[in-house]
Image (cartoon, rainbow, N blue to C red; front, side, top):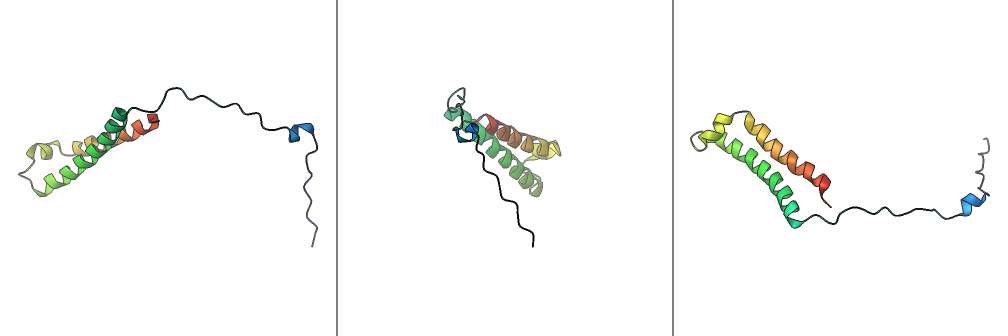
Length: 92
């Protein structure tokens, strides 16, 4: 069986020098509680919209205005959820 090649160790001065990393300062502080509340509220509101849409389909007389929206209910519900999810990218 062939013998494996051994690794060569670095002997230069650059290998013995410590890493020179400068910390990056993040602009701004943590998000306000209002931002987090709106973000989570939009996501929950989107889920509730979807649940109400399905409940309106099972009881046609209960939420007539929601049945009139038809397929737009999916866009509204998923849109609210997506806006909340996109807000998570700005959350600190």
